[in-house]
Image (tube, rainbow, N blue to C red; front, top):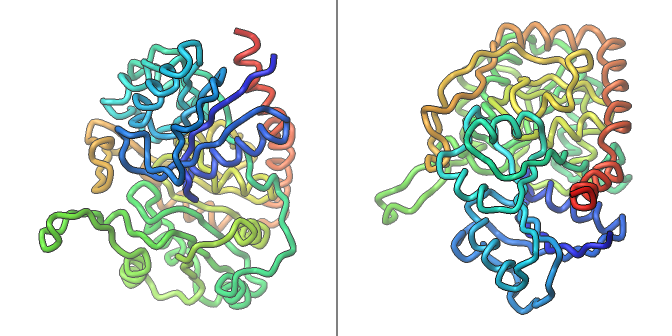
Length: 384
């Protein structure tokens, strides 16, 4: 069956944007007829903020995929159905706590179907009242373990030079309550002395989403803090340590691949992941992964291949996104003593961690190749 697809996704370097771009690229590589509409977040009632006028494209597509948070779905469902009432309009989304936002089911249930990246997501969505068809469709790797030989970003190269031949833990994620990078900083500084040959790179964006607020001095406009300032404040709370490096600048895709290539272990004390692109990409590079096993990560991180931290569930408490995050939701809170034990074990057992990294990479290649996932996607529409 030959189908044409109108694909809508965020034009940004966070999880949604990267996942959408990767999937469109994979569809194109399999010669699927796909049109990619990139939007910037905002104006949900208008379908987003557009780089160009999408309304001039009057082609009637067989299928529309709206790879965004569900608040954008009503606009796109109406837009696509107005052009072609037979067009199937599907959403593609994820969530990271034990309950989806209370206003989501109405958005989700109007769609012809929903893709989620993990079986964990499917269970949570159904538990929370989503009755439309739900299919599990994993995200596609951007790199599949491949790294170019292009010149590395000067800041990143400078950090690599300082790290030298140290064992390198590395973490990738925004500075937010959900990613909880301060837990990782605390665990590292308490477990490792400066004279040990071990370093940590913390890659974030420039924003501190913990310090999200409205400022009355600026007519109550929403503002976020600086991740650099938040990092400096956090690090002063713990034992001084010269082997921790914070990178908040934008890195190219090649730079990110080089970070995965150089690192020895991807690590995160996250409170929950819809999928977890950072740890996912690390597996493709054959790296050890140490992470809180709450959310979509458990789909692709078998416990015998990864280092999974013990955790307890706590109520969500979050300044940013209060329309979606609420105190009746729960997410994970890592047990720091267990994280520290596993970090020490990783550092001191090179053969074991390297073997697990290879096993993870082989597991990815068998189960999560782009061709395999595109085939899985196409079968949804050819088999009913």
